[in-house]
Each structure stands twice: as structure tokens, then as C-alpha cells.
Length: 241
Image (tube, rainbow, N blue to C red; front, side, top):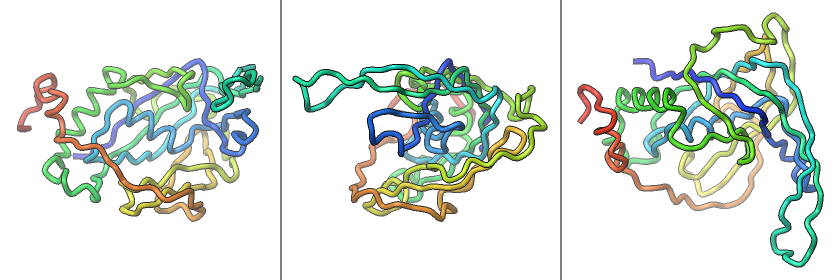
């Protein structure tokens, strides 16, 4: 069975933060969602330590528009200092289609008995139909999002027939210790291009530009599969025990 899933997500605002804009306390969104943001959305829909979600491609449905807002970020560690005023630049009125698949996390040998492709595929699909198991955020917590099932490629996109549009060097995602088997955290970068509204992501290991962030110990959650959430009772699957 092919374990690919298709879904769409949308919201009033999104903030896929460019790391370079965080230094001064002001944030500016990338024009397109990052691999890591899409992976985080899908993990909010359904995730278990047994699997690693791989984002294959995303389709931009609506025109890319930005909107700036004045915000007062908290000054942590400076309780007596007045709050400063910052400008955050969000994407507005966004909608995307995503296609992804999951692979086994081979660094979690304790989850080997939970590697049932049929089970995880059907539960993931049902979680998409229900809008996800957890709240969906488009980049940051203040940007609420919504998930629905779809067929990738259906409907009209604003960028159909638009041609090729490159975006230069962008953040791709993080290499976490529990996924790479090393006690290190790395940031990955790549150079995406959109062709007729579709961006095809390269795999994490194919990113040639990497930056070491810090040493980090793996402390993955312990899970026994679906049983701890009583999902097998709520979503009985034929042939799954």
C-alpha cells in the first residue's frame, strides 16, 4: 500500500519565519511555507515516535500577499522594562495543498513492533478528516489554521501556468537527534523553486547547506503505538491487533 496522504490547510494569517529577521525582535514571513512548518502541521494532525513524516510537495492555491501588524512582544528576563513595539509581517489569506508520506524511524528500535504501515496510514487519514488531533498553527501560535482532506492537484491555483519562480536560499528544517542518531542539532537550508504553483521538496539528507546549532541529547517520548490513546477502540481497523 502507498502510504501517501493528501490534505489542504488554510487560515487568515501565516508566519513562516525567516531566521534572519528574528535578531532584532521583528519577524517577517517567508513567501512560501518551509518544510519544517509543513512537517509540524502534519505532526499536529497525527504523529507517533514510530514514524517520520516526509513532505513531498506543496501547492500554493492563493496569491502570495503580506500584511504587517504592530505587536508588543514580551521582554523575558526584563520584568521592569517596558514592552517594546515590533512589526511582524504575515502572509494573509493562505491556502495550500500538501502531499506527504511517512517512513519508519529506524533509530527507535523500541518501536519496531509498532511498524504497521496499514494501521498508521488509515489512522493518519482519519485524523485528517477530523481536522487533526491537536490545534493547527501556521508557523506561530497566533496564526490558527484548519486542515481538511483533498486530492492533491484538484481545483484551480492562482499560479497555474505561472511558470518558474525561484526563492533563493531558504531554511528547510532541523535535524533532530532522535531522527538522525547523533546528539547534535543541525539546521538545513536549500534553494526552492515554484513551478506553476507547486514546490517539490528535496529530502532532508539531500540538503547540502547545513549549520551546526548545538549539542542536544535525544529524549524521545515513550509510546506503545495506538493503545495509550485508546485509538484502536475508537478507530477499529480490520486486521490490526
